[in-house]
Length: 554
Image (cartoon, rainbow, N blue to C red; front, top):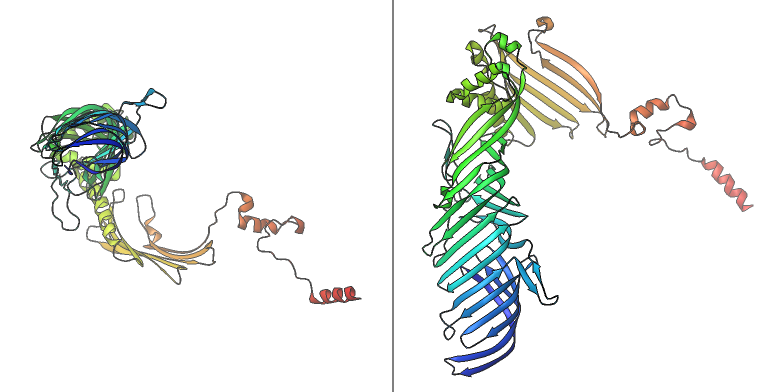
C-alpha cells in the first residue's frame, strides 16, 4: 500500500533457480539487496536496507539485515514474507532498534538515537516534527489489513509538534479562538489522517529528552512547549478510529500566552499533566499550572493605613494561569499569589481572587504594567484605566508603524495619578537633508482634574542637526511642554525652550578616545603627541628635490 510504504527500490544480486510454469514460477536461491530503500509514509522517514535475502517457493526470509536511518544510525530487521504465487502477500517483519549483530566484529552493538520520524507541517497535520527513539516495531498481516505494533522510548533531540484546531474560553467575557486556517483561502482546516485498513498500536515511553509542543495559534505564537515523562499509547483501527491512553507529566516548560497585543511567557510548574483516557487525541484532559512573576507594590491594594506602614511595598507577585478542561476546549483561569507579602496584603489578594471581575482587572494590570490597581473609592476610578491605556497605546502604535516608512508616527496616552493630569498626544519622527536633520514632534491635549473645565494644548518640537560626517557632534533646538507635579513650580510657564550641543563617541580605552586625546595634545610637547590620525607630514619643498638631483648628476 503506497499510503503506508512507498519509494521501494534496490538492486538484487545473486543466483536463483527458476522452475515451474510461466503462470506459476517457483524460485529458490539467495540474493543480496544493494542500495535498498523504503519510506514509511506516516512517519516521513526513509530507511536504507542492505543484506542477504533467502528465497523459497512461497517465502522470503530476512535474517539480521542492517536497516539504516537517514542519519546513518543502524538497526536490524528480521522476518518473513509469505505469498501465494506472488499474490496475497503476508508480512511478519520485526525491526530491532535496540541492538544489532555486527558480522565483522561478531558482537552485538547497541542502537543509539535512531531517527524514526521526520515530517514537516502540512494542512491537516495531526502531528509533525523530528523524533529519535530506541525500541522495536513489528509489521504483520496481509497488505490490505496490516497490524503495526511499536514500542519505543524517546531519545535526545526529539521535537514533536501538535497543532490544535479548536477554541478555548477564559470566562463569559473573555475568549480565545485557537483555530488553524488556510492562509490563502481563509477556510478552516480539519485534521486529516487516513490509514484505513491498518491496525496501529503505538506505545511510547516519553522521557525528558523529548520536547513536546502544543500549537494553539501558529501566527501569534500561542503555544505550550514542555519536557516531561510518561507512557502514552496510540491506537488506530482499520476503520480509521484513533484513540489514546496514558499520562504525560510535565517536568519543565513554558506557555506563551497571547491575547491581542499582550504576549507573555509563563513558566509551567513541575507536575502538570496531560491525560488521555481512551478518547481521541483532542479529548486529553489538562491540569497545568503556569506562572508569570512580577515585582509590584502591594500597598496599592492594602486598605488599612497601619498595614501599609508595616508592609514592604515591592513584593514578588505570582500571576498564575491555570489550564484545565480538554485540549479541544481548554478552560483558562487566573490566580494571584504573593507568598512573601504581609498577612494584610495576602488577605487583600484573597479578596481579589474571590471576585472574578476584579481578578481579571488586577491580573491584566500586573501583566501589562507590573502593578496593582487601587481597589478603594475614587482612587480606583483615577487609576483604573492605566493598564487599558497601555494596551490601547501599544495596539495603536502597531497600526501606525505600518502607514509610512519616511515618517514614524506614534500615540502616547497617559494618566498621571500623582498630579491628576491626563493627556493624549500624537507624535512624529522624520529625517531630512540626507538624514542630517532629525525632526521630532508631538501635539495633543492635557487635562488637569483640579481644573475640570480647563484643557490646554500641549506640544513638543525637537530639531537635531548632525555637524560632522561621523555623527559625533550634534546640535539641537527644542521646545517642550512642562509636566507639572506636586513638587514642581507652576510658575515655570507652559513651555521650556533650549539649545544643546551633544558629542557622542564609542571607545574601549582612553587612548582610543579621540576627543580626549585631542584636548590633551594641546598640553603635550610635540614629541609626545598621541592623536596623530589626522596629522600629515610636511612635503619636501620642490626646490630641495631639484638641488639634490643636480648634485647627483655632477
